[in-house]
Length: 143
Image (tube, rainbow, N blue to C red):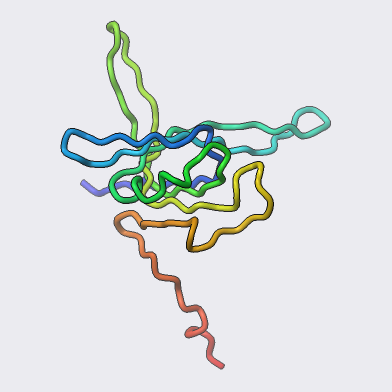
């Protein structure tokens, strides 16, 4: 059976500080939620509409970024979607979570001045099948 593609990238702001816990095997698990805003046409005008996504980061990625993952911080998340299913009181429940393979810290939080990122406040770990290497477009130019 062939593998299907399951890759998602979202840019948004943290709705709460990231929570870090450890599995019984010692694996770090970081949980956070982001709000992704978009403009939608409403009648004669435009309105902001937010979507909220739960995300999970694992291992060193979660441990290395916990300090920077504070409410309001803008981040980019590259990962895959995972549907979690469970039963409670005889009722079936499910939710879709983004399993973060890479996280890029962007700009400041919504209260800070300026934007952009530097080596001090950014991290990225490419998920399996992706490369962190930057392409060399200049080598393709024939002159």
